[in-house]
Image (tube, rainbow, N blue to C red; front, side):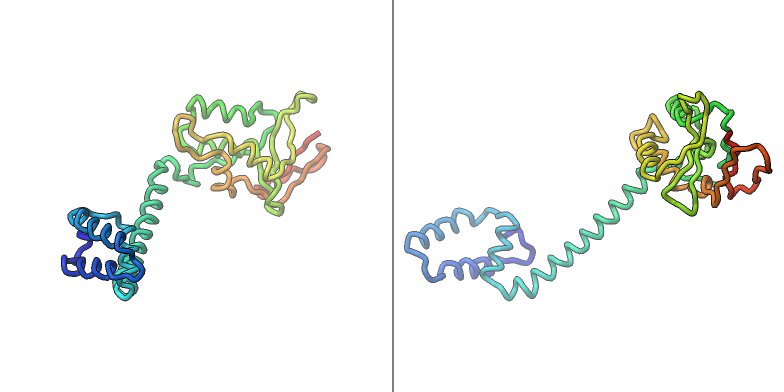
Length: 232
């Protein structure tokens, strides 16, 4: 108890005396207590032991003075822990993770171009991208998200049977499983994934309508909000 601020020897003696006169203590128990009191007089006990001792021997002090102080200190500690956690989370990302929408180039999906997701992976591993905006720009070459059906994506994919590129429909879960495994930075311990980039900049790849044509007859829409393509 000597480790508790504002606790003097008089108060300590008072607590010991209250314990020693507890009814039911045998002569041997009281002798052991007095002997331990002398032996431990200059030693400090654990905070939990002292807290329990105060609670059992001076309930009024425990409830009116000690407990409110403890709750206040715990509240301050919790606030500090939250602030520390937020600060750590923010500092874990580099300046490279800040996305500048103005740097993103929205590309059209060209089925005649030999470019797909594996090419983006290769460029990431080879560290060919200067920034995440370049990655997102390339992502716009291979995918679109349908605005009216947020769980559906259009994906450019190579058909091994037909030996050509085509557009396939994929669920949000399927796309998430696919892109969440690919880091945007290969040489960093902490990195956003391609799926996180898609979520952060989904406006770049979102379309309101889909218009597939199986005939070259008719005009292809130039509206960026309409995904229009001839797929013969």
